[in-house]
Amino acid sequence: MVSLCLRRVIVFSRTSLGLRSMSSIPIARQALLDLGFSEEQTEKIQGMRCPQHKMPNIKELCFIGLSPKTVLRILEERPELLKMTDKELRNRVDALRVLGLGEGSLQNSLSRCPALLSVPRSHLQAVIHCLKNRCQFTSLQVLKILHAAPETLTQDPSHIEDLFQYVYFRMGAKHQDIISSQVFETSVNEIKVRHQFLERLGKFQPPDKKRVCPPSNPKLKDVIQLSEEDFLTRVAHSSSEELDTFRKILEREEHEGEQDIEDEEDELINNDDDSASENEDSEENVRGYKSKRRHKKK
View 1: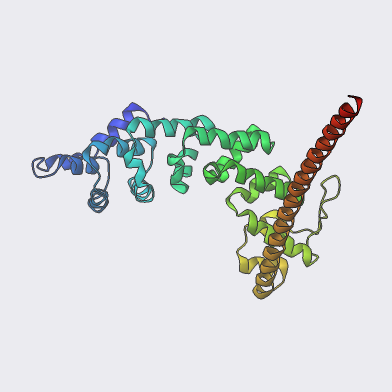
View 2 (view 1 turned 120 degrees about the vertical axis):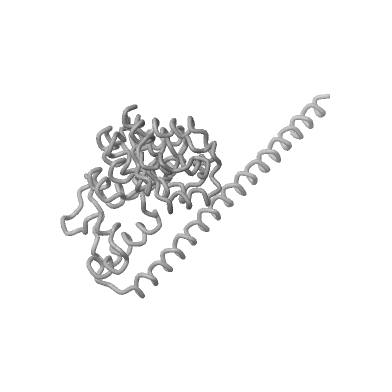
């Protein structure tokens, strides 16, 4: 945490501005200049119609250790931060620190992913729970994920779990491979397309019962991180037309599979209804038979 002494340095730097006439410069403008913003940056912030009572939010971002340039970019990308109270913003920052994003890594993470400041504490906890319990990452591995790919904290836990299960079970990836490949920033569908495209081409073999893959399989990061052009040239050795055709085939197969499941569910429901109807008829027949027996005895 930035020390109180550093806070005072930030606030009371730019002593040369003391020669300016305070009566000719609005208080909010002067406060921004005192925080180290340039004239141009100050004009941009004021152009956001930032009210003076939101200055504590801007100061809080500066106190984290973010540069004025980074603060301006964060405010442009996440204007909702100005709608929070400074206490709410401070709590969001503290929640990130608790996860292990200390000085240096915190600034880098926020600069790379400003959306982290818009994520509630409950969502952060849900993501960490998913990584540790659903995906079986260790605490140290989770910390590595947060440092390498802070965007993971903004993802939906179900998305994280689906991605993990696919690359872990279907592709035989190990935990360390998943961390280094920054899997959780990728679309599940795109991973499926590339992986199954390679399978159809005979360039990716499934893992055995012990989850061991042939060494000839491409590395996970090459399947996921490369641009489509590089993926086709360096890994698949195929054309974009073939990949597009396969993507359409896969979409049709998945659609047909979903339709088959729906048909099976409908059939089960109809069978249950028929069984229930037959049971009702059988019970009615039994009641009728017993009634006739009683009538004969009389």
